[in-house]
Amino acid sequence: MTDLAPHELRILVAVESAGSFSGAAQPLGMTQSAVSHSVRTSERRIGAVLFDRGRRGARPTPAGESAVAHACRILRLLERMGTEARGAAAGPAGAATVAGPLRIAAFRSAALHLLPPALDRLRAAHPGIEPVVRMVREVGRGTAGEVLDGRADLAIATIGTTSPVPKELVGGVLMEEEYALVHPAGHPAPRTLPLVDWAENCTSYTRDWWAAQEWIPRATVEAEDDGAVLSMVSRGLGMAIMPELSLEGAPDVVGITPLGPERPTRSVGYVTTPEQARSLAVRALIRELRAGGRKPPSQIVGSPSNCGDRPAELS
Image 1 (cartoon, helix red, strand yellow):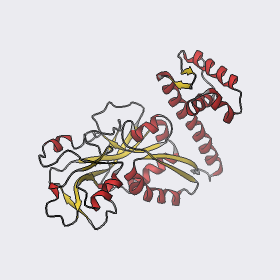
Image 2: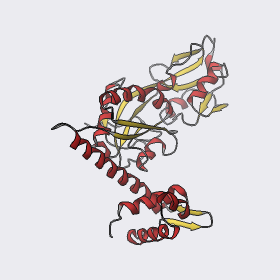
Image 3: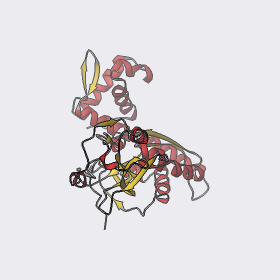
Image 4: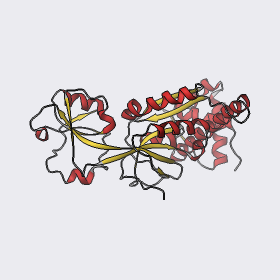
């Protein structure tokens, strides 16, 4: 197979993003026929159909989804190569200037409470870095999917061992979150209240514990995210079982009660690709994330999973 050139990779990414050849042509400064010809050439070289053509445009096939994800990651590495090479040339002897955009995916509570202090330190040490943070719900492929698809250089993810390990990713644990019972402050019997929950609340961390708690009812109030859950609890609409990061800045009208010595926990960490893990900007962010860790991090290699048990540690 002949390797695809960077401009061919950009065309694949543009078609997937626009959903059609015509939609991709304009921002690329090409004609529709030129885009179509380039895609057909790429398909022939790869040996697979990458897009289903139809009246509604072009949709990636499973092979196309894989190809576009690889294309995004390759293009990002090429961009990083140029940025770091220029930084090395501009910096003093033996020291490279770390600069350029750094794309980060994080679930809501991590983006609100875990990332900001790390980014403050990162920008102080490397003013040329431009963090671009995208909040992604930690459901389905979650924040790790953003890294796998080349849309993020690093993700803050919940990490576990119950999902198959994607060989493309490496990562490490930054903190262990404890779950707690959250309820209106001063309520005489908070465990009798209705349960407020949200889809992102990762229940596989708590599955065995949850099943053993006869007092926990089925959720009768569903919210969009943990912020909405906390707001509902603060207004007396129910109780919830929530992890530590979600409770940062909880108002005084909310009571937080420990769940005892057998309380469930979950691991929060970072994930990236092996290639990005060697880049200066990603390494700098990982250092700052570790520096702000609330508990000593454990290094792991393996998959982030949106729901999983505590991760296996490297010996």
